[in-house]
Image 1 (tube, rainbow, N blue to C red):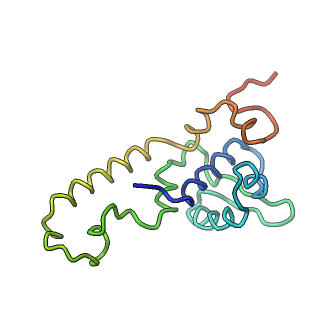
Image 2 (cartoon, rainbow, N blue to C red):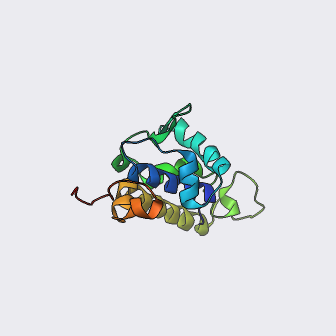
Length: 153
């Protein structure tokens, strides 16, 4: 299974917001940090906002912030909201297959178990876990201030 660019950058955007905790993150800054278009990030914001994963503040001094604490947002939460399909094979899709084994194929059960295992692993990790795994994330993303996990001087 391959995740879409939308999911990849949704997770990156959430990582940026978690590293910039306590401040609104601006889309132009996030886009610059990751070398992606602002328009693409605005598109990604919609499903994340609708799901309550992020909150947006409009206006000149607006921006985006996490809708709940980073340790409460699992990777599965993000994948579920940003991916259009979890069909690992055409027989997982609704009725569009010509295979005579579609209702009694052993492959379907194996792929279903694999997908469940994939989701179970994603559900074990949060945005906070990923951010804390990189103590210098603020520096790497160009976010001013203390690095996550670094004590104040």
